[in-house]
Structure formats: C-alpha cells, structure tokens
Length: 386
Image: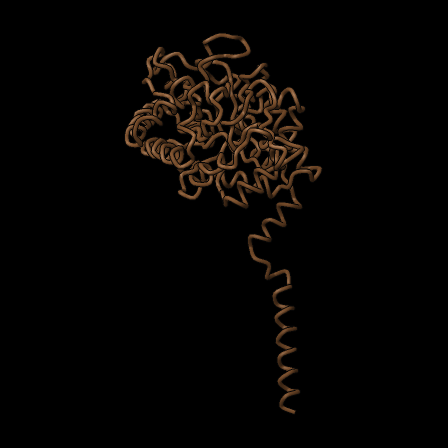
C-alpha cells in the first residue's frame, strides 16, 4: 500500500513539473523577446540594424550636410566608414586623405553627423599597404615582413607609434594585422607585398600579438586577416576568385586559432578564397562551413566577423551584388565592407545592400534573430571605442 502511494506521489510530481515548465507564462524572458521579434517585424527598426552591419567607402576630402556619405550615414544608420588615399576607379590619388590636419577634420566632421558611434576604419598595416603614407606627412611604418625579422618588442613599439597616430586622427579601427603565413613567395597579394610576419604559425602569432597590443594601448580595434589564410594562393582576390584547394596548408589556421584563444581577436576578416575540400560551392566569405562551422563552432569565436571588401573582383565578377550580400549574411557574417573602391564606384550600393538583406528577412531567407545577434556583437564592440 505504501509503495502504491509513493508511486502515485512521484507520478503526480512529474505531471505537475511538466505542466509548470511547459506553460507559456514561464518561458524565459529572452525566449519571449526572440519569439516576438521573429513574428512582429518592424521595418524601420530592422533596416536601422542592417545599416549598422555596413562599412562604406566614399569620395571626398571634406564633407557637409549635403555630402553623399553624410546623407548615407543618416538615411541608413551606417555602422562605419573606410578611408582610402587612392581612388581606384578614377585612378587618382585624391580620395579621402591629403594630410594629417585635413584627415583629422574630415573624420571629426563625419562623426558629428552620426547618431551612433561610427567605426572609422582604415588599412594601415605598414609597408606597401598603408593609406597613411609618409609622403602625406604621416609616420613611416615598416611592413609586417620587416617587423617579423626584428623583435616582438620592436613590433609592439612600432604598433604603438601607429596606434597613437590613428587615435590622434580619430581613427578607431585598423584592418590589421595580417596573420597569413608566408608560404608562397610569389603570392601577388601577400608574399610579394611583404605583408606576412613569417611562415611559422607560432612566430606569426607572437608578432601579431605584439602588433595588436601596441594598437590596443591607444584603444584601436583590430582585425585578423585574411581567414582562413591567403598566404599560399597564386592569385589576387581583388582581381578574381582565388582557389587555394591545392595549395592550402592546415597550419594556416593556427594563428587565427591561437589569437582567438588569447582573447586578442577583436574581429576576424574573412577572405574571398575557395577551398573546395571544405566547401565545394562557396568561397570562405560566403560559406557557412567556414564561418559558422570553423570560426564559431570549432574556434569558439564570439566576436564580430567581417567580410573582405564585397567590391573585390572575386565577388563582383562571379556573383550578383545582392546575392553575394545575402549569402554572406546567411553564412554568419556580421559586417560587410562596401568600399566603392574596386572596379566601379556605385553610390547606390549601400542602399541596395540594405534592401537585399531586408527583403530576405521578409521572405524568411534570413532570420531576424541573426540580424539581432550580429548587431548585438557590433554594439558590444563599439563600447570599446567610446
């Protein structure tokens, strides 16, 4: 009799627990919010969030309220801008940067028009890839290759010099360091330009760490590039699609993994490179297998993932612009660079990108929760530049 009563009590408790935890009033608050966001989409809110996912290039060495970039920042709520010293479509040197005084004023004026803090980004690696050239009055920064032949302390000191200069100008985000390995000396975009610290993953990790620490001293955000590794390639993704299937070496992933583990990866920039052994259909920048599979799941990276320039030939020549934008977001990209400094200059590109992502949210091809997740990561990163 006692056993029967005990059994009945246990069954009763199980049923009560099931009823309690399955009742809708007890859904965790975060899940409630997600459920509402999935079903009640506010177009203006979502489009504002999508705008935060864009980093856009423009023409102009000064701005006012009627400038293209100012209107675009206001209308689309852009997340950031990218500065160049050379206009590729026009083949002219005058783009955004003339000298330190002019550049500082340009950045200050642009920032004053944004309702949210802007990422003010630039490619300032040193050597041949540095938009802030000595001929314009900026500090001379050696290439990664030269730094890799000195000491880690010297690399940190040089990065501090660069960080101080960036900070004084108002630039808060440097797309550096390059952590590609020096595998192919004839590589036109890495090896031949002196953009690698070396061919040993541990050496590259140590020197990249020093470079990052130097920039962090002046509150400059950084980006590890070009995931999953561009150092073995034979061609340049600026010009067309790069297939690294036969040249790629597994050790190319190690600097990314090491720096993520060391908590030194503010962001990771993903390259337009094909490795058909991992994804036979898409380059890394459009590949869920690379971004969600390797970066997020395998390496546990929870920071901002940034696409390499979506205006590069690798994308422009092989995919429709809108299709590539959507695919990158579906793959797990948080921010997209639209430089307007590839083969064409197209001021409609940012709005077309926002429209494409919004339309995909409406059709269910992109989940609203992914937009919220990306913009939350962006928001957390922007807290570091205030």
